[in-house]
Image (cartoon, rainbow, N blue to C red):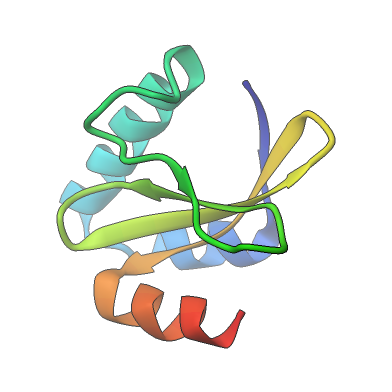
Length: 89
């Protein structure tokens, strides 16, 4: 799977707790090999736009937009912020 991270994603990642960063690294390694792995809950979350979600932990998610064959990771954060963000998309 091809993917890139935006500056916004990188900035949000830097302020995450260390354990969440480790979980994110693990999740992205799994995703690159097997995006349908059940632990990831990787899914399209928007009806019209190619926006996808991946589970980092029970309380953290990351979002990407698909552009051609590349996933552009643009956000990572806690589930409360995730819920608010997807309502605004």
